[in-house]
Amino acid sequence: MPHTPATAASHAPLRSLLFVPADSPRKLDKAAASGADALILDLEDSVAADRKATARQLALEYLHQHPKAQRRQPLWVRINPLDSPWAMQDLCVCAGAPDGIMLPKASAVADVLRLGHGLDALEAHHALPAHGIRILPIVTEVPQALFALQAYHQQPHARLHGLTWGAEDLAAAIGASHNRLPDGRYDDLFRLARSLCLAAASAAGVQPVDTIWADYRDSTGLQAEAQAARRAGFTGKLAIHPAQVPIINAAFTPDAAEIAWFERVVQAFADQPDQGTIGLDGKMLDLPHLRQAQRVLALAAQLARREQA
Image (cartoon, rainbow, N blue to C red):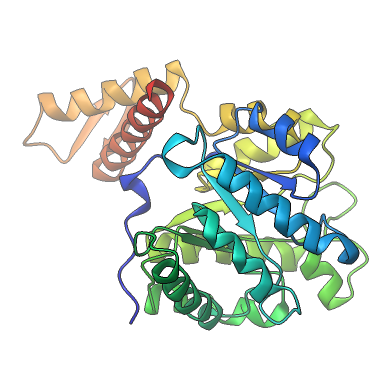
């Protein structure tokens, strides 16, 4: 039976989630030093069909070499889609107690429920804590998924960590030649997919994670897109190269000026507790501004505690 997920704000969000081809020990070692908030050992798109078994074995070995209690960063595994011939074999990685499973090409919340039932059995078999393995589905890679996003709120699941979206597979699924316009903005369908993912994650009370920036050499473009994603409400972003990690982490971390402003906002309301609207530096602020300030300051405190841990 589904359970209500933990509120995303109760833990510091994963700002950067770095994909690493699981069939490359060299890349796994390099990724571990990247400073990413989480690594995603990839068994899907970055691994050729004839390397799937090797990637699966190396991922399991890596998880065993980095037991959960000693990990510097969470280790997730992206399995292959549930309707592929590899997905059930991929779940052997549960023996290594990954922190989570990324589920690609999720067409509906039923896919999360199906995966959750499998994880229930595997956790019991391997004597792991119940619901210790979270799920992060990619919820826009197939067209039909766009019509089912409200169900993540209507059928909440205890394992659901967040929702993320993808533009590359969606473009291929609908036959689009590109997902962006000549000026670099996403075309209409992909902007819709992004917005629906963000709204669905917020409604479900889980972390909204923005998709990849494909050109890992374009740090300026990545920075602009990551900053825009945070302004929109996303709290983290997928990465495909270690060089992207510091840019993403910085974009999703409140800076000193931002913290100072929001501390003043909170203090101004504290000084006038009987006022619903106050003026500060020529700006009229009301209770939504206070809630925003409290949210940002809570995020800054959570990230600071993570850095000190």
